[in-house]
Image 1 (cartoon, rainbow, N blue to C red):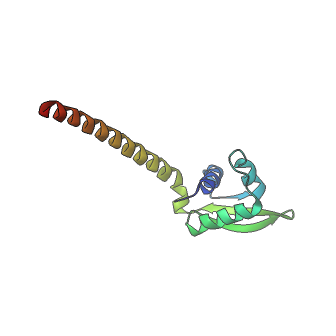
Image 2: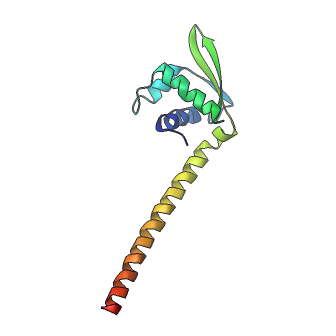
Image 3: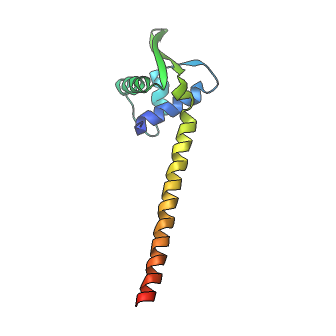
Length: 119
């Protein structure tokens, strides 16, 4: 399960890599894309990318572009299916909440009926 920061970075990477095999992304691009939610440093970005590599979402190769660090990122199979898995997880959560609420309502109704019968 990804943390909130990892999800934010993965969403950005997924949108950049959606129609391409691999892309060049600088740490500043990632930091500015996630700026509205998190204030990420270069060290945090490096740690998040390493975590995503370990979880088999992406492949990362560090490169230089005019003396600045750039990541060459390629989505792995798990990364390609990231959006679909995320949507599936949300559907499952909604179904669990709906089922719980319906069972609570049913329990309440049965309790009221039993109380009226035996009172």
